[in-house]
Every structure is written in C-alpha cells, then in structure tokens.
Length: 477
Image (cartoon, rainbow, N blue to C red; front, side, top):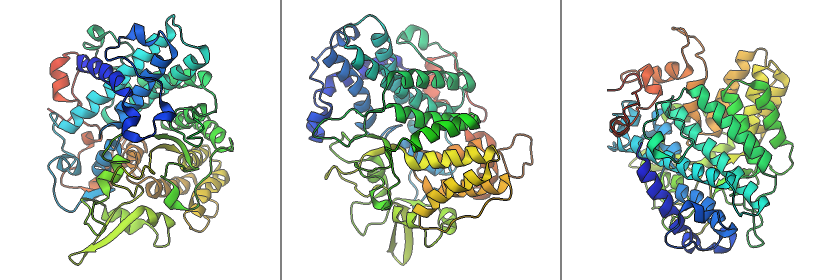
C-alpha cells in the first residue's frame, strides 16, 4: 500500500485544519488553533492545541471530498447489491452494477488507499498519545479514545469489502508496506480491542461548545457502544450485541424522529454520531450523488425495481424516496438527504443512528429465540414508519425474514448495510454448503453476471505490484 502517500496526506491534513471552518463558517465549534505550515509528530503532541488539531484533521480528511467514509459506502455497495440502479450507463458505476469489477478500478484503489491513509493518521495519534507527552490527561483520553474508534471504524469497511487485509498498527511504512493480508477474524479481534480501549477512555458527554450545544460530531462512549453492538452482531455474539444495543437505547439521550424528514438533519435526535460537512460544494456526498440540481431533474442513480415493489404504499419511509415523472416514465431515487449544495448547512453525514440499535437488538433477540422481545423492537421501527404491529413470531426463521425486510427498508442507500447484510446472512435454502443469502438474491437479480466470488471486491492491482506479500481475492486476475 502506498504509505508514503498516506504520510503526505497526514501532513497535509494538519496544514488544512487551520482552514477547516473557513469553509464551513463554524470555526468556533472545533477550532483547536492553527498549526504551523510544517508539523512533525513530536511537535504535534507537545501541546493541547496541536494534538486536538491533529485529531480534527482525521475528521476533516474523511469529509473534504467524496471517499470511502463520505458517500462511497452508500453508492458503490448499493450498486453492487439489489437496491440501487441507473437509468443510463456510467462507466464508473457499471462494474458495480454487473458485479464484474476489474482489479485496476479507480474507485477500488481510492477506497483502499484513502482508508489506509485514515488508519495511518489514527496510528500516528495513538503512538503520539500513548508515548510520553505534555497533553492534559482528560484531553489525552478523549483524543485517544476517538483515534481508537476511528481506526476500528475504518477497518470494519476494509474487511467487509475486501476480506483479509493487512492489519497495520504502526506508522513505520518500511514494515507495513511489506505486510501480508491478516485473516478477517484477527482484524475483528483488533477492532473489538480498539473499541474496548475507547470505551474506557471516553465519557457519554459529547464535545460541544455554547454555539453548537446539540452537535454529535465527535465520538463519545455511546457511539462506541453502538458500533460495538454492530461488530458483535457480525461476529454472531448475540448476547453481547443485545447488551451493547440496550445500553445505547436505554441511555435516554436518543429518540427516533417521528418526523422522518428530520432524521438526517444536523440536529436529529436520532443521531448517535454524525460527520460534519467541510466541503464548499455540498453538505453530504449522498445529497450530491442522489439529488439532481434541478427540482424537476431526473436522477442519475435510482432505487431498484425489486426494492420499490416490496415497500408498503403507506410506509412513511417513502419520505426518503424522491419520485418524479420524466418523459412519461417514473423515477424513484434516494431522498434521505435532500440538499445537493453546501448551503444551508443543515444536513450532516449520519454515521450511527438509533434505529440501527433497535434492528441490531431485534436480530440478536431472534437468534437467541427471544421472539417476543424481537418483535417488540421491530414494532418500534414499524410504528415510526406508520406500519401496523407484527404479531408474535411462530419461529426464528419467520422473525429473521421480517428483520431482513425492515433492515432493507430502513437502511437503503445508507453505508452499504444491504450489501453487508446479504453477505453475512446464511442462505434460506442453501444449494451448496455455507451458501450465503447474497447468492440467492443476486442470482435472481443478475443471473447473467453474478458469481459467488463477487461478494468480495478485488485487491487493487497497484497494491499487488507495490506490496508483493499481498495476494488477490479468488475470482480476479
């Protein structure tokens, strides 16, 4: 992996922190002071202001352009799955729509490279904050907890997109540039350990200012618990998943928005963690991707027919769907985010929200055969959507089918949830040992192009050249 470039990007991010809120007009919220033009790591951890600027630099780099944690996960896994489509071809999207991605695909390279760049920045923070330094202890704990969380969050997407990936925990590029792929299980172990560290370092209080008292744009302990719940679910640790989700739900801090148009706004009561916009061009990448500039414009990316046929006509989540007729044909597109420009600054990138915690706990309860508890959590989500209560499930399989449906409608075009869910669930009727739900769904959706190996994206060809210790995923040249 090109960690030389990662180091360069990290240095650039420190230089750009000073101008971060010149773009947003919100300089008082996270202004940590302006670092000098040239900053090296030992200097960064010499005082509170520079250390905080370094941490803010990670958030800034995540959000300053389209990328793996700013739009890519809503777009490309959605196109890879059965939820997004295009009414006209586009070269950069077509490989994902046909599940035939070449190893030299630019989006794949950018996803890999930029994610490792964020990880490098987190590693630098962790090394600097755990070494002897002059940072105020309470600030040190806050920054270190955030760095551990952000490292785990980045690795989550790497392993769910690519499978085994190098587990880089150092800033020494002479070691990491020759590192082989680490088994997924070991990467998850590290993510869990990072989150346990973060949980012990952080508090439930959000970092805010009097000017922005309600923002939830910096990681707190409950954001850590929410992400833990997801990891435990993916690891099939059902009791742990239910316990972590319950801690978030019962905290009393979060509420489901009854007005669904407010769910993705910057003051959403449902938000557990959001990333603040910094681009001068848009609020969120999703708004830029999915919402045409013209109020009557035809969207480039649309929702799949299979999704639209399933969603109930009275489901209030249709407020998250934009429908327009053009040339006598109806087009339905994602409309969770409704702004495609940078002003007004009213929509932040929703990273973690309360509805997911109810869905996580419902699935965990179902797997534990606690079916009344599972249906109760699902009904909480359904009631918000204006749908009638489900009666108690008669079997675990019935519960899981209902959970799949609710997750599909609740999280469409959002952070790749559908793609990752299909990959982790077992097939309902397996024709081969170990077959996953994704094979059943995608064989029906794309019979001409689907192959089981497409469940993982290819390791970028450039990385295989620069690091000979890497191997390619099965099914790719």
